Image (tube, rainbow, N blue to C red; front, side, top):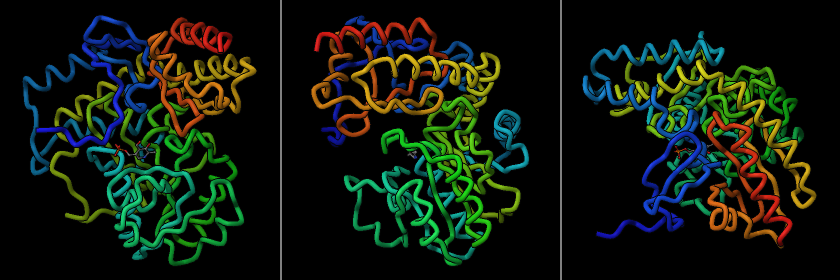
Length: 375
Ligand code: PLP
């Protein structure tokens, strides 16, 4: 049977991974500055994480949500302490799109409305609800028409005010757009979204699937703006590669039995992975490291005259390369064995493990210097 061919793949087969490095089946070592779309938060194969999964698997691997699972409460308690949202409620699911789907559903239940305001260049996932609020023409399908969504340019206060009325259930926004090219929602704009949602009774959903879990140098990127959303969605870095997602839900929103549900969400192994991730983040002070390394990387990147518009927060960084340098990502991989990400034709995205060291960053800069001089 053939695999359904939807992924443009590099001809590399990872055989081993540790920290910020991957080794392929030929034994070649790669510096991983992409972390499989920002999922590697604490580093590959962290010993505490590996042991947590191994010991959980030897006790109880999977069971559904029809029995008590104390690991869910342990995860919720740790997450509350570390994120500053101890008073919120946690719903666990399996992916970022599913988290957004459930957040949209909750907003609709809470308000009795169905209109949504979303932002241009946003990416919220590939389920029909998440696609409907995603402004990416490549993944639009006929299902989009079932949702009433108004798209507004990010940071355009006037267009946003015009889109808002008392029929809007939810405003959904990424604090830092990832797939959209590391475009930042301004702090003042996020504050405006909060105020307008309060005025109209809409729910404010912050999609922190890519920017959350310490990546920005705060636990959630919207915390730079000092706002508290009604719903926060998360996934990627939460399980360091193990599939898990979640929604943080304001105490103003009250659940009823059967309102949401999932077979696999919050299973024992996923919880064990997510608990181990939070333990390592706290123990190794990885949120602080992300903030400090972000400053280090962005300062140095701004020193390269050929690179334009270096932007981001913490270890969620983007920069543009001129047309003549469009192959730089492939050259970094082929010649220097360094993985980076892309967003569009000219934007390079860096989403390394939050445990990245200066030495590893310098390895990248040496390669960049060689490539930019030689071109
Ligand atoms: N939201 C954002 C901001 C994302 O970047 C992504 C994935 O890239 C998603 C949602 C969807 O997450 P998943 O692929 O886990 O469904």
